[in-house]
Amino acid sequence: MIKSIKIAIAEPSVVISRGLSTILKKIHGFHTDIFEISDFEALKKVSISQIPDILLINPTFLFVQGIQNFKKQYINNKTKFIALQTSLFSSFIIREFDEVITIFDDEEKIKQTITDLFELPDREQEINALSQREKEVVSEVVKGLTNKQIADKLYLSVHTVTTHRRNIAAKLQIHSTAGLTIYAISNKLI
Image: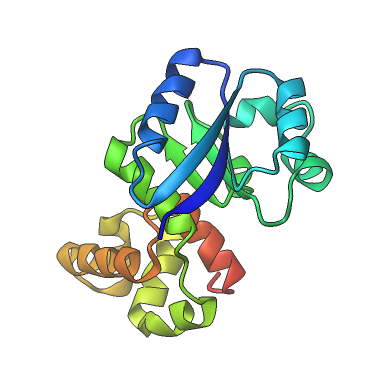
């Protein structure tokens, strides 16, 4: 069954916005209505009138308004909020988003990120699906430690840490540190 989703792309660069639109239209199993937005006023109007399922937004759009204020005023609680990271942003800013896509992600990664947002497993099953050691690895990853540092701290080999991280990503369908951070906070792992 084909799902219909509305995606708003808030990005001042036409090249980036059109490129994302092209990729998002190719997502298998979804019919996508895409709204390309290049200024803040249009973003407010589309957020209210179209109620997008996904708001893919360059965080610089919200510096004046503030992310939390914008969410309270213009975003439906069911709207997924994805950061389009075109440059480095503070982890405090990125933490406010449901997921992150960077300009360096390939087409498959972008499509998988969008697909994963609509096929999220039950949170209770997710937390129970992780072993104690995997929970410890998640905790260290969100603290910003490298695989080598995690291995040293938990007395594991780097290969074992890499395997744990791969298993965590497969179980949770979270493939970014920002996503793991949100997961760890919401499940009280840190």
